[in-house]
Image (cartoon, rainbow, N blue to C red; front, side, top):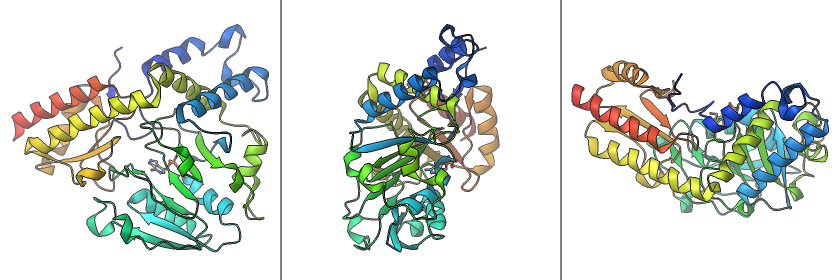
Length: 359
Ligand code: PMP
């Protein structure tokens, strides 16, 4: 069997080397006679795996001791509720930026807990832009400012960080580990694992420790960052296999040269694909150039009647999961860390050939 190129937005490609190692270790982890997923999360073996994963993740993202790193469950969608439950404190309002479908979901969920002040929105451009920062209506009394640095569906990415007097909170689900960021600019970062981290089932939270004391009294224990931090993310049974596999991905990332090296490859992959799309006269990407995502590249064909044939042919050529999100249609190529440059080259070759046959 040869592995195909997988452009899925999530759960997304996992490095082949990681899958092979997991396969080798699957039924007998390090000669212990059982698999890692059959061990107690409190066993010395699993605790060593968990600690190594955290240490590598901290190293990859240069996370200082003033931040807690939590390995949680419930997906990024749970964080839409956990963030207000934990960070509102005495305040009754929080600032949110609306740059797409994931921002909207975060805003809707936060509305259950507080007054949401939408400081800026790009809905009037069908989420193809990022509102200029000087137009944002920030509230100094807000508990925090939440934004989505990379909108996975719209393919819109911030290449700058908002400046705020309140803690900055970012949903980095689809951009984490793809390029270097300065964690110190953030109060809290969260990300579902199933794109650049590992398999679904795990959610990473990086939270500044001085924010851990703000939870509402009614915050369920399972949603409390403080409870998670005090129990090394083992208040209950964590997603042990996802945690282990993410640790293998972190080791792989370090072998590749870390986030700085990935960033270079990612920038090259994205530039190639956008250049091809822009110069094709057949394919189009709607996003303003300065805000085009390095990870998720949505595109349309000159005639949407060709979409089906495009996807069928792609599948036959070993290029999987290029269908756009159901809410926007068209195509989307997600080109996360584990999608090699050869995959992008193969996609471009297929797109050029399809165009020649159908334009
Ligand atoms: N935020 C962003 C930016 C996402 O891309 C996704 C998933 N595609 C989510 C949140 C929701 O994540 P989950 O399915 O892990 O809850």
